[in-house]
Amino acid sequence: GAVVSQHPSRVICKSGTSVKIECRSLDFQATTMFWYRQFPKQSLMLMATSNEGSKATYEQGVEKDKFLINHASLTLSTLTVTSAHPEDSSFYICSVRGGITDTQYFGPGTRLTVL
Amino acid sequence: GQQLNQSPQSMFIQEGEDVSMNCTSSSIFNTWLWYKQDPGEGPVLLIALYKAGELTSNGRLTAQFGITRKDSFLNISASIPSDVGIYFCAGLRIYNQGGKLIFGQGTELSVKP
Image (cartoon, rainbow over the protein chains, first blue to last red):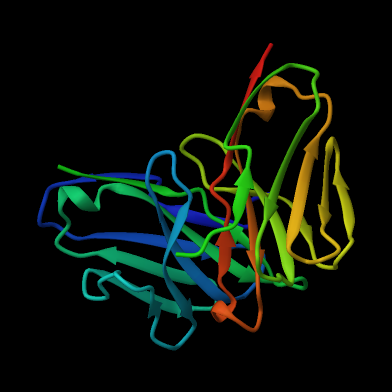
């Protein structure tokens, strides 16, 4: 069964609005959660790493004020795309690491389209 | 960012054929992971490898953690149409890179019935 859930799976919004994406670890308490972005036909690009109760660590070139991450608990992380613009349209995927083998699992992804 | 060298980039094969893909790096990894991604979905973990030399199977899939810890391969035997998708290798170093997964560029597999 699924290890990670993500909601919503698809969202279409108007330019200038904010969008929140939820990621839940279903099988275990995730020590670390990650947010990735993926463009068509490309590999996954890490945006940020978050640990519960502490501020997220953003990768170089990722605007922390644009992509707000809240790691509320060991099973929930949210990504908010603030004041979205068409160039923010992409496939966003969360990931969790933990469990006995400390393996990393991915969510089903969220397709964001900004009009 | 840094990536693993994954090859081939794409493969077009006939149903029933075996498939082999690999990833190499100039650096050592502690863990190798292989994922499959279907269109519009997130990557799904296929096989995880934790020890140099480890050979692990998952149904028709077999993967090995290279003895030098710098490479890994994934084999798919007797391919079927549902094997179509993009396969990614990923390496993890615990002590460097902040424990971040480093991904290969992906191998896009097409299977002709």
